[in-house]
Amino acid sequence: MESTTTNTNQQNETPEKPARISTKQVFSGKWLKMNFAEYPTRDGKTYTYEYVERTTTKNGVDGTYIVGIMKYPQTKQPPKIILVGNFRPPLDKYVLEFPAGLIDEPKDCLADAIRELKEETGYTPTKVLDVFKTDQVPQVSPALYIDPWKSNESEVLIIVEVDGDDEVNKNVKQNLENTESIVVHLFDISTTLWQDIVKLAKEKDYLIESKLYAFIVGLVLSKQLHLE
Image 1: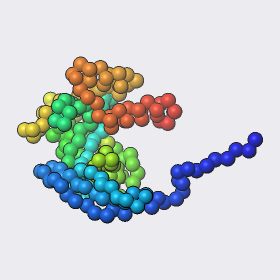
Image 2: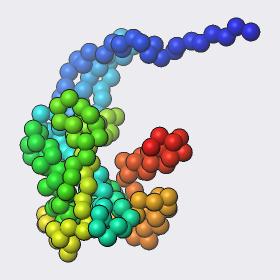
Image 3: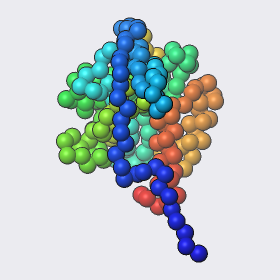
Image 4: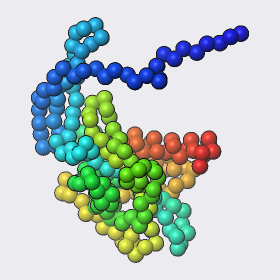
């Protein structure tokens, strides 16, 4: 029997972008502003879309988040992943997530990432991993959009190694702002990583960031699909 496949998504064609009719700022605070954007509908009418953007955006990038891997080359302990419990006022709870922060200098996101990691956790990275293989800055991801349905906020991802045997990473001290409430957690990178995270979240009444869940799903799929 002959079969046919219909490409309903027109994957090989470049979609036509709807032309924005107008943009109106309706609120601006210290960190965020609220905009209304007007677009045409397919039936010739118009609709208004509400979205948020940061007031601190620099060169199209807002922040950075850091996947930190703790290794122990001398003592040979199992590698660990560095996470933080960060109090998030919109949720009125701590959220288990990767260290992250706003960037100061878009041309030097690496320096901003290292600064954020040290401020939030006390740890100093000893190696920045070249994972992304881009032409410009190999260690820095492209701009990644966090919640494009309601915001144009973007982050870059940086992955680092931290030498847990180095004296600089022993007896570390955070350097938090007065408004920050952040607790550092180290987890063994093992087959029970997700179970360990869920257990801590229940014990501490933490919520879990979606990026962290996606990261762990990637680890699991890599092993199940033999992609490592």
